[in-house]
Image (tube, rainbow, N blue to C red; front, side):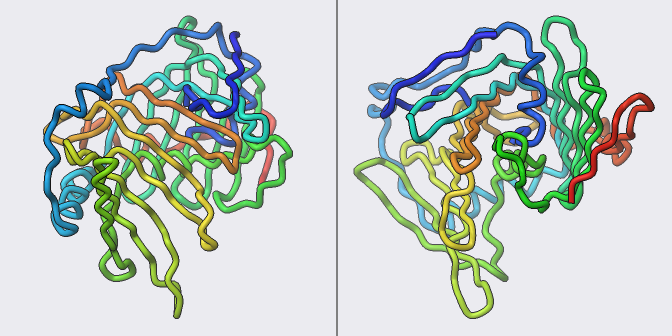
Length: 295
């Protein structure tokens, strides 16, 4: 295992999906692997002309990204980091091979394997209400509610599977509950959709979706809690077309309040494949595993 510290002021370089189980798996991860991904240099980006788009056109782009997706099967390299914002440093851990399955409305499964040995490090599912986690090397099986209080002093132990889904799906605003505003930041060449949600007689900022002004690809998504605090900050890069649907192959997830960061480098993506069925989201307790309940 290889770790590294980064000084304050520098960007945290290696980036839920596994806020509950990452810390349990870290002790058994293999040596850190090298990851390569495509990036666009600032100089090359600046040569592209700025594109014009209205609020309605940007919302339609979100519909084009989200609406066609009924399910997906993703393979990716998953690289976690533990953050220490007070000291401005992050500790990077080994990359694992991850298989991520999704089915609407909120079923998600994440299976992580040792990229060398092929053995299962952890396996977890959630239906948006309850999650289950199997950790074969520890012979542990955890069942809990997605909204269970965060009780662990180690922030990574409080991860819920749907934290990852918050970043993997970029939904359009709901016209029945959301009010959308547009910010056009020409200096940074970015459009920002501010999605404000009606909460009884009040309005709260729910999300901000950033669009690259030179490509109109989604470059970032922030989600907020009821008092305006940032819950997740996800950056998207290297958009590609899989099965006729655009999707980012680089997904950089930061959850600073939870002190973790995860980077997903997508290796393959299949949308609306018959391989994703309801039975894929059933995870039973192994006979030799100790059960732990979280409420």
